[in-house]
Length: 478
Image (tube, rainbow, N blue to C red; front, side, top):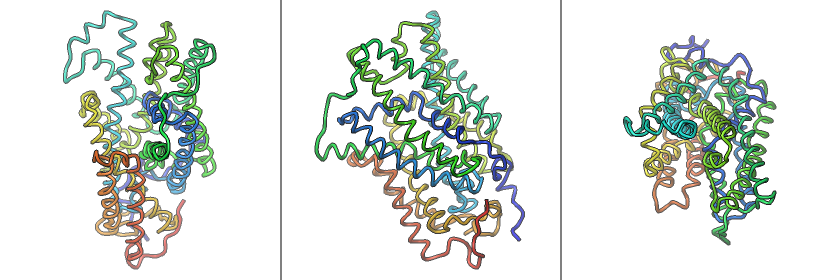
């Protein structure tokens, strides 16, 4: 009989999910929230300036999204079958204590983006406040730590709104996502209708006037695929935080199908049309939806659109940058840190990193995000290869909470093979992502790190069994 679950490894938030409340629609709405925001808008429109035709860019997006869809189903299935969140999933391959490394890498990256997304959302709120009350301009003349008084008010207001959602747990997150994600389509369709009318329903379809050919075109096509897969690298790790409460694998797969390839392509086409029309209307492409909205000479529409984009910012931040560190930090000390407390730690950290200062320095952003992001691929490679190719999906969930022995204890709670494999993958992926001379290969750093780590782990696993010597064969526990 296994030992009783240790308090150093378990609390109610990290325990297997017993309520399957994340229906297909909830997961679908999650993807809408992740994609329907200012950051994703500018990310998607950037691909149309790679020198490829619009239809070629959409084809590259489709290839990438099919890959993401397949990988997301593989990763999400682990959470759906076991009912455990990402840091507990990581215990399977990294060990019950070794899992803190992949958990904290994901958590720290999320805290940084939590701050940046909150700051970007607060900029929109500040712009709206100045539009409605020009007298507030005097608040921009005084500041603290590089942010004006008005900026602090907007930042803290949005910061508090996000924390209010998280403090009520995952069920509150689910209910918020159910309506926040689809809401942005209202603004997108308003923008689409406005530009269509203003351009006489002839907005055009080609965004970039420049074209590349031959090998350069192939490289740009592949770069788009690599960048989109990397964009989803964070969720490819911690999608189990959500699918652990999915009622069935079929429900999860259908939600991923409609929420990823279908939804992303519809959103991308809308973005392309709106941006193309902005060239006709203003003589230059407007890649920031907030800036485009502000050019609409209609105050009620401006207020509505800004509020909806703010709602979307809260949605993507809660889903992508709060849920994960809340679980990740709870995994470090389950006895003392709950999901709610983990979310609060992430929120405080998002202020301490002074995201407005970091965001203003592209060099810092590139090195920080590039370095940490390049670690995500190797972690994914180890976890997936271990679960599907080494263990053949057989996991004893109860032993993921056992200290001092069991299949996932390895050496004092750490699996050296997983650590070494991830380190080897990262040793290649990080230079590829950061060294200027290898800039052309940077979009492929995630995939390169994932493949190398997976191959190394599989080779190491042929030498030794995945669990401790003499352990009984594993059995699936659902």
